[in-house]
Length: 121
Image 1 (cartoon, one colour):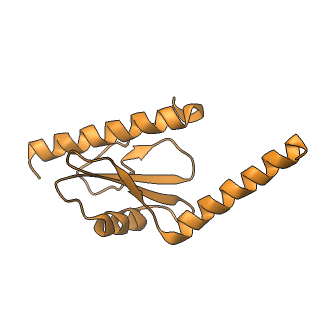
Image 2: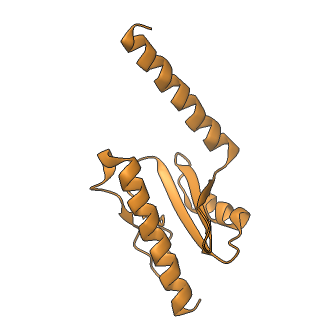
């Protein structure tokens, strides 16, 4: 991988970390780019959100399936895998396994129900 591609990857990881900090201010002081090493040790591209493994892929035509497979292989069994894909000059989108999506969906509706109960609705 050339220097320009590595720099593009770093920029994408910083963008993702900044986005997560905005959406999850309660973890902002912990969210950061993962320490990328050349010895093969796997770390998430962005760390600091408990229970999640974040991978970032950016370029002309990133392969979402390959990125998801890579993240699933590296993540712990109890982590939700989320891969941010950004084609050049396009808006980013996320890819995640169906089981992780349904886990998040269930948690969302459980939270909504708890909120309604607390409000007496």
